[in-house]
Image: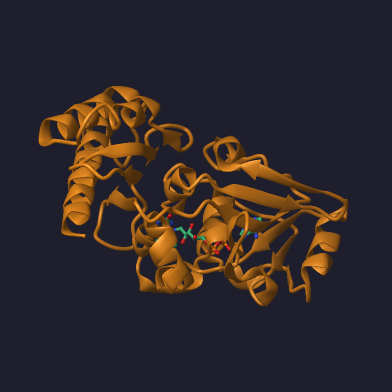
Length: 292
Ligand SMILES: Cc1cc2nc3c(=O)[nH]c(=O)nc-3n(C[C@H](O)[C@H](O)[C@H](O)COP(=O)(O)OP(=O)(O)OC[C@H]3O[C@@H](n4cnc5c(N)ncnc54)[C@H](O)[C@@H]3O)c2cc1C
């Protein structure tokens, strides 16, 4: 199907959008930045009766800190996130992930809600949202629910979001002063590429040399959905993160991930790369912490 042939409506408000989604006799799909959608339409993978273009709903584009955490509107673009001083300070791992999404054009058009909505196990922002304990708010015409990110995805391209629902808010827990994060990615090309493996890391550091009080690690593209690496996380706090300790943690990741082989990489290659990316990320974080 050609993109010019699709049927599209542009609601004036979130309420209008939810009203449209509640109609029973047509299938709808939301269009935000359209960067995933255009590809899927061309490939005839997604073919709803009507697209709902929410791109002009400015009330869904915000970043603000409140008592319960930092709220990010689903229409917030990757570029908005990269430029946010608040997120640079309190969610550096998400900023790092957004910098790695495709090329600049993709970052300008693509949205956080769209990256979550696609539910790809390779989506770059999702591991970062895992380590920031994100919560996804879904609204329909008649109900509202908030789902922790670790329960939201149920398989490749699948989440708990129902057809009548849309993502209206993403809440993250801000990093503390002594927390630092990074995002490491292996893609087939430098830009414009979906991850072969990626990892988001956030560490809460202590006052002693290389002391890690707690850490969060989430891998993408190594399982049907994003996974937290609990064994590696526990190892982070067993003693100072010396070079030997970092290599032990990275070695454990090799056993913890469960990748598949596909056209982009073999399972064994993904395992090795998961381990290497974690090692690289931990070294980088130690260097940054020591330079601070
Ligand atoms: C050349 C190219 C390179 C890319 N590189 C990367 C990359 O490196 N890393 C990466 O992670 N992704 C990459 N992508 C994928 C894409 O750019 C991102 O996933 C982007 O964040 C999608 O956002 P969007 O606003 O364009 O989503 P859209 O295409 O508008 O929508 C994507 C999906 O999310 C749903 N959706 C959107 N908003 C909502 C909402 N508010 N509520 C409910 N559902 C919603 C839509 O219905 C659709 O199912 C790439 C895509 C292309 C074409």
